[in-house]
Each structure stands twice: as C-alpha cells, then as structure tokens.
Image 1: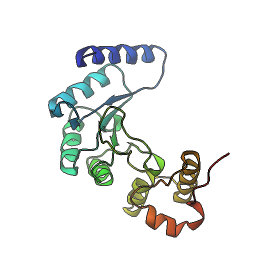
Image 2: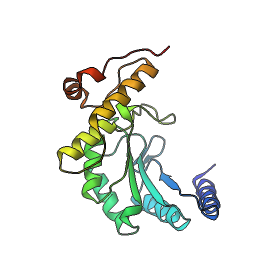
Image 3: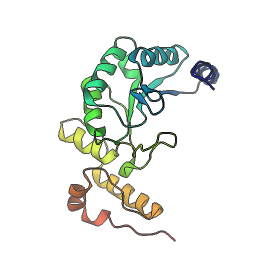
Image 4: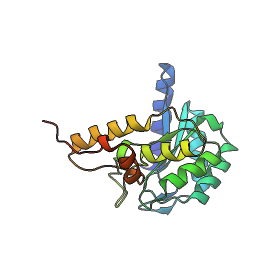
Length: 196
C-alpha cells in the first residue's frame, strides 16, 4: 500500500488499541533516508510523527532503518520534533551500517531523548533495506551512557551473559564495537557454545 493508506491503517490500529486501553509504539521508518527514494524530507517525518501522536501513540520511534544517519542530522531532527511533540514520547532506533549508531544515540541524548531500541550483540538488520547492518548494540550504548555519567540500570556483566546465550543459539560470534574491550573485562562470558 502507499504511504497515505499505510498511515491511515496505522491511525486505525492506534485508535483500536486506545479503545482497549493498550499502550502503543508507532514507528516512523526510514526517517533519514529511504533505500528506494533517497533522503527523507524532515517535514514528512514531523508530519507522520504528529499524526501518530494525535492518533494516540504513547511513544513515537524515529527510526534510522538503513543506518545512514549522521549525528548532526539526528540532533537537528530531534530538536525540530521536540518543538512539535513532548520529548517523553520520542524514542530512537539506529542501525550501525556506517559505524555511527553510538554517535547517533549520543546526538539524540543531547536533544533530550532517553529511550532507544537496541539489541544484544548488535543482532538484527532490515529485511527490506539492502546492505543494512545490525541494530545498535545494547552493550555499546550502555558502555557509552554509563561512561558519560548516565545511569541505565543495565548490568554489563548481565549483557555479556545475554550475548553468550544469543551466540550459543545462533552459533556465531556477536558483539558491538566495544566487544574486544568487554571480552577482556568479562573473560568468562564470550565463548560460543552450540546448544543441543
């Protein structure tokens, strides 16, 4: 379906969820660049985000679906969005395709965002975006945030255990950009073991 029909379907879904007193998250995908149409206009992102909020979304996630964003663009988009929507309703979703996921998270933090999608070991990708890398690695974000004086309430050793579990399930090494350092700090939590 085209964008207009997809947006209308999202609004109907959000209204149905609201009628059932369910909490909801609405995603504005490819909010920086589209793999098929190129750069996404800022006014389109703002318009979609505002429509999702008016339709009852409890949280609006601005998604760098293909991992093409850079920190300056992230800060600018969230600064503009914060003028239209309550900051406590905004969240971000980054991929690490170009190696800037953590920098982009920091730019969003500087703009006032406090909720982020992430995955242990950087697992993930995007099935419709050619070449998109995994999601921002939870361990990289936690390490950056804690090292910058922000409390996440997330245990790095616990994350290492979760990564080890995911590695065993997938049968391959996982990890964000900080894994070499984390493996030295938590040497008992990184071996790949295949689950039977």
